[in-house]
Image (spheres, rainbow, N blue to C red):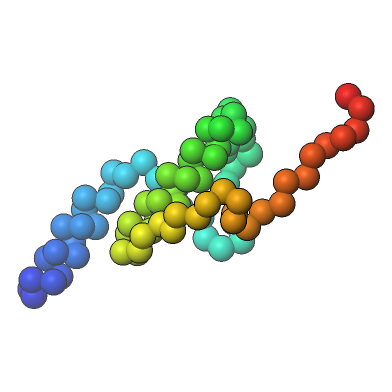
Length: 80
């Protein structure tokens, strides 16, 4: 067996017990997937996943000044 095939099999075996869930395009996670998390915890999950994806892809995260973030803050001015 070529060396590449052995490396591939070893990596596959190492991933076998990773605590991840996989969803095909169009599928949705089960209800309550993130329901027990606060907004801050959800943001931490998204940040961690994003940073991991960048590392795996061999890319670096861009550092953008907060004033240049591509977002718009909309405040809720309705009476509470």
